[in-house]
Image (cartoon, rainbow, N blue to C red):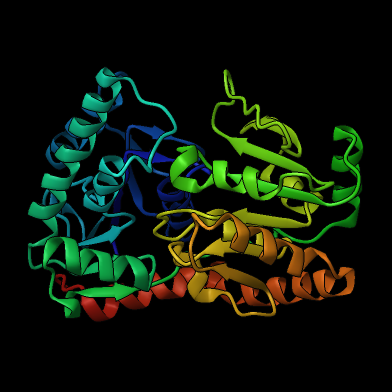
Length: 361
């Protein structure tokens, strides 16, 4: 089967990028991308470097010119990365993200100029998604929650959307006491340590998490793409460590922490949740995180309202207040994550291709 994988970026960091990276390693497709990290058979799709709005807006047109459907049995697009793919993996709903922007739940602070920019940056992909998702093309959704959003936002018939969860490399992300001790020693960490991963602080719920941890004797590691100029001066905030994405491996951070907390207002899946669980780290996520669908009560807890500071605080206490329960939850998290390893991910894609996508034999 001759497969083309189309993605603006292919790397280990980021949801879409990590999904494409894992697929490229497992299926050995011909990859069309603007930026790659250790992918095989890559065809570079040229595009401008800045602004990101134009880089990602131009990419689908250029990739379509370079990647003709007739050359491949399967053209698999990551969202709107190709104009005429055989199938699509939907990683988000730009329309839902645009609604969050209008509700002031995307960023902490935005100047009028930046707000205008983000309105355009989200409106264009919303229109492109509406055009592409309404074509008679099978769609892979990374969660059932996202499937419902797509149906609501773009009026897509539900029979055209198939939920297939992403996979995790259980060898790369695995429990390691040695790695835990080493990382905590380098950072000087003691006691209970929480981890927050992601950008767009307000959408991910970071301000609410810091408020929920007020007066707690704990440390919060904040890992994001770029921590320059980021600070929170809450008078009773816990000890805060800001870590850029290249400071430590993500596996080291998951092992060093006792609980991953993601009180997000919208995450179509949430790769850090599955990766943390694979490292034996319990998780606390909001009901607006797609990965909640793979979590049972013995591996983590769900936050019903990410704006309810008291609920976040009480559920954190419920998990970390009992050290034995914390360990048992970590062990169960690892067992749950093992169901979604690379073998599962590879088989789910291959079976999808065989059963849902037509090609010339």
